[in-house]
Length: 401
Image 1: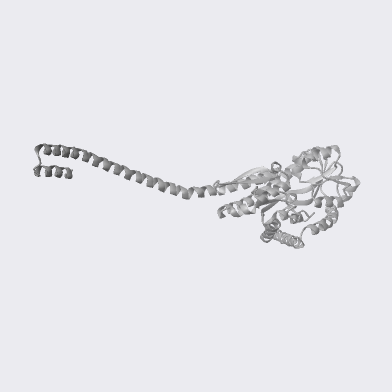
Image 2 (image 1 turned 90 degrees about the vertical axis):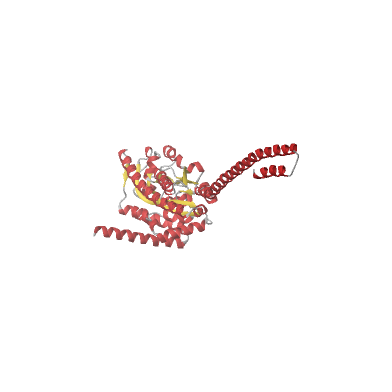
């Protein structure tokens, strides 16, 4: 505006003709009117650009912060699958594992549960775990023995004197670390042991009987169904079964009903839940074999988890173990009561009769186990078992003082 005024004044003082002065004045006034508007527009545009830059800067800052934190949040949100058996104690253990992991990680690690049959047989599921297609599995000894024959040592007949010893052996830290290392080595560093928990205490169920001693097996010519596990088959052949028959679990009922088999063995609750006691009339509480469920994970998956998540998984394994043990004990007791109420003949062998079972079963199994399981692991198991029995005896002694 000042420049325009000076231009107008300079023209007047220069002695220019009046018309030229008016033209200059008119032009000067025109410029004076236009230039303030242009300056105002320039200032407005400048302010607008400044505001836009500030907004853009804030937006860029927000996006930068989001870029920093969003990938971390996404990385912490992980899904995993646990395959588990259909028995009630296995289902309850799996749900306890899931609930604790998800609560302890605030949902950053979620566990999907699927029953074993939906993913195939034992070998297929084990292969999926080793390949990383499955994160967690809860098989019995038979489901892991193809990769880890060591697992069969716990199926040694009459290895455990009572349930408390069976539950307490996995609490021996030295033994559990050895077992974990041996499993990692045998599986090519793909399978990590998290926990051992109760699967079953196995007894006899027959359509003929009662079966008090191995001699009764021979007298009644019992055709015996076993799992497709060589140790079980050799054991009952040594105990006097007339024939060893392998049928799948769903076929057990019809096999008993048709007479294809006369007897089978397994846990009390499993036998009752499967309806087998509708056909079998005799129960012999031999307690000849204790078996664990093996809670295992894919090792790469486990090691990829943040430390806090690994801790949650380890805690969940302890909770799942306590759950399986408690539910197994409860379900077995309930099944035994139901069998008695249904009029089944339940026989409890005497000490002398149990010794007759042991005298045949223990050496027969020893020959098989010594061929399948490294001697060092057998010795470590027996040493850990002795420590466990002494520990329990000490606890019992202190409670009676």
